[in-house]
Image 1: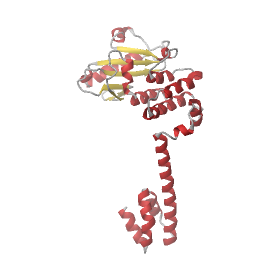
Image 2: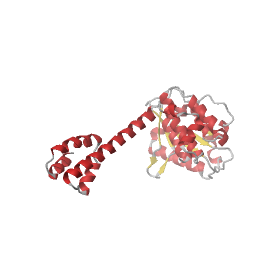
Image 3: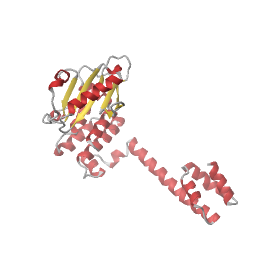
Image 4: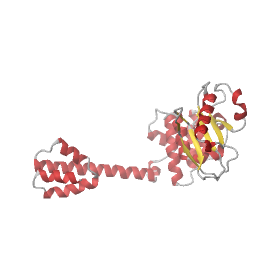
Length: 279
């Protein structure tokens, strides 16, 4: 998963992280995340965080993440930002949030934007998080994006250990797995779980795992029922046409189970065709 998609995943899952990063927004503020396209210019914003409560007075936050040098970064960011406000003037109460990997990146000329960069726009250099002890699990997720390989396991485990309940654990596990997989693409998912100190027995307790198991069991049961009913019909009518077989394969599990009983009443292949038309 590319880094920009990781930022998207983090803020889509935890949009209220913005309250920890932008000064002046209280922790009780609730935000929703999107990545809208500005129609006239046909560009997509990295992220837009809008207050859920209308009339709250909380600002709209324009998010951009930058992990490599790009001399056109600032000019492009502000062009996109003001292009959006031109189309949607209700976003005039705005703040900017730039997540930048390191101060050493060359992001182009800043002097034209000095007042904005020292006022409405905040820059968070992710490298600054590496040496800090963080109480916030959400900031630890951002830290995980930039820590050295040797510290990935320890940082990732700290994120998961801070989960307050099962829902939070499942959310964090999905994000942590994606981040670790992007930094260590050679690892299989089992190796990632081993690095995180997660046992299979722990995973089996999560609703995410149980849902996957149930889906797998249902799929397996459907494939078994399908194979059985196809054999029964082929014996009854000698040969099924390709179209008939495709229709049967497209049936839901419930319909396949019904067909496994109803075929006993079929006298001719015409009865099968009529049944398929109804289902």
